[in-house]
Figure (cartoon, each protein chain N blue to C red):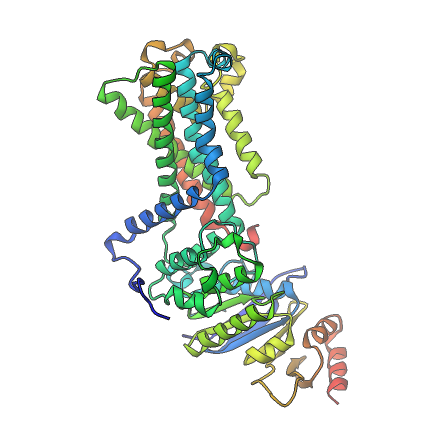
Length: 262
Length: 278
């Protein structure tokens, strides 16, 4: 698998992605922090479900917008949460999805990993929101995707579901899958991701992220590239910082950040 | 975890790449309908209830009078039933799949969209067939309907049924994939009701203003009803049917045209769906 390179831009609006550059290495877990709209847009473009206004995007060697069925089936997508409406059971849905993939995982194993085994015979729409979210993840990973895109996979979930989803994300990465996920929690990014990207005002304000989990410190370390200056920030809430930065001209941002790191 | 009962080789070989998925999809759709009591009632239950009501002492004659005869009533119900089973049920079911992201997920697999559509069409066809058979048998038992004994008539009926359900399925999927929000569940049933009324199948066309039946003329329901009446009630061809008569081929032509339009629109609808189109 090739890394992804993407440079996309949309005009006006809070869901912008503006002149964003990002390379993701195979087998990496990258967390997107910052404005939710931009995260969703970026993930939508990567999944080939949204049109981009410009720029160059390659995901697994193809342009997502024009890639075919076999490309799409090598991408697992967990979109922002929507309530399930089907009367089929969790197990039926996962098995059915597995059926349409070339080398699927064992559906029962996937259900077990996500804590859905006890409720596998319950209709999807009767599951709790946490269980439905776990089912979303199950449906995305059962096809053994090369790339897994998750839009706020643990947003609003309880600890058990969050723990299960984190474990599954780690295990698919261990099996070689690249993961890009959006989150509003720097803590989650620190725990799970190799790198974090902070999006604000549609721009990539910060690259390089929390690094490996740092047991000694709860703080987040971010290294920023802003206006050509590379900065490092310890602690603080990167999403908040990034939002502030978005409203300032580049020079101001640099000063502010330098102050923060000093 | 053990993998008992699970066969990893799931994608069928080259040749059966389309047929097998379509069969699996049909099974899944049937299972789904079996678990949806509301959908069962609105698609299969309602026409049967009306047909049963036709045997009641007071309601029966009133219904028959509106429809213009017991035979016409049964055939009108078959026509509406086919619309409910294909267009309405498929539109409602598909719009659920659009809204909860099921269709997005299916797009992320190797399932051919045509097999997905075929599953829908098979569901519509099987339910239409079951409903039509039930209604005709009830019509025979309750109101003395006589069925044709010529095999050719049944051949034509089968052709009309297939074309009608395929057209309805395609249009139903297209309606569900419609990104604008007006295509809601009530809107779907409103469309069915308006077209059924304008088709002259359930209301005696001689009691309808001319503009109503003219309005119904381009739509497939009108032609489906006309085709069914021509085969099932050969002795009762009215001036309404004669006005558009010319044998069975015009009926076949109109229904086939709608079936093609429906399939193309349905496929296009689910293919162009994107997150930012909604």
